[in-house]
Length: 362
Image: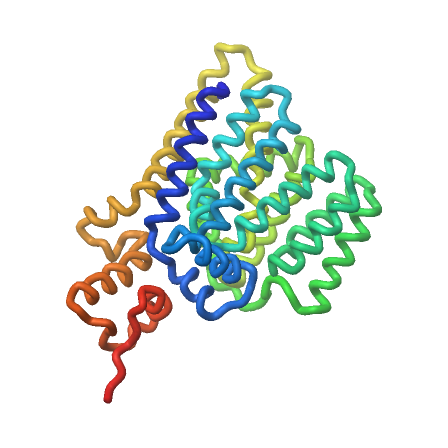
């Protein structure tokens, strides 16, 4: 990808995330965190409200983390590829991943974790170790599922005989176990294995996720297993194993798998550049097909509001849980009401954000 095309894409990305952050109604997850939690995510939401009113204020810090993530990914890509065109292409694909796009405009822990993980990899490859300890400490407190990250660091350290990395990651893993933090493991075989594939397909786009799995597998067999690959592969393997027995929260693993865009593009480059030009056409066509479906998915996200209003059955739209309480509150306000009848339990916190509480009986 040429530099001028990348700049245009970055311009459209910036418009898209600001538009989505400012116009998308508060989600059930955001509303519940805002009124019931005191963690990092909810605290940043409250801080943002002091600077900017409305939906944009809620997501102000997450927009900033999103742009920081794109910048750090660009730096890491530049360090990973020899050609600038590859750097631009990898960053383009990464910033338009559905998971990155939505994480940048909705309050969530993933977009806070991502820049920390990317910064860790950048500093590790540059040979700085002391700052890595502070990043690991931040991840320990910020993300309850960073246990997967420490397992990946431990495995990488053992494989490449990095004693400092082995020792530090092992200490953090032990601390997770001691303080009973991290991912809850339990349940019994319940058939969530297929469900996790569907969730990954939503954050990558279906065809891109299939290539992600292929790239992970191919690198395992005969590719260069970098730290980036260890982090992504460990998160993927761990989530798939857990899904056999329990429902998996995709947000626990998304920050660690989405950074694998660099690995995926590296595998693609090795596949196409070892072949003569006449044998490259099939790979190029496949690449364009994948990009086409990614573009369609991104378009559905960016224009989801329009699609919601024109769809024949809004209840089947993926954004129904965002718009139903918002439209309900707007309708009640137009009718001059300041409360609603009934419990509306699943919409309670969203309606509370719109200053609409249940009517109390005298």
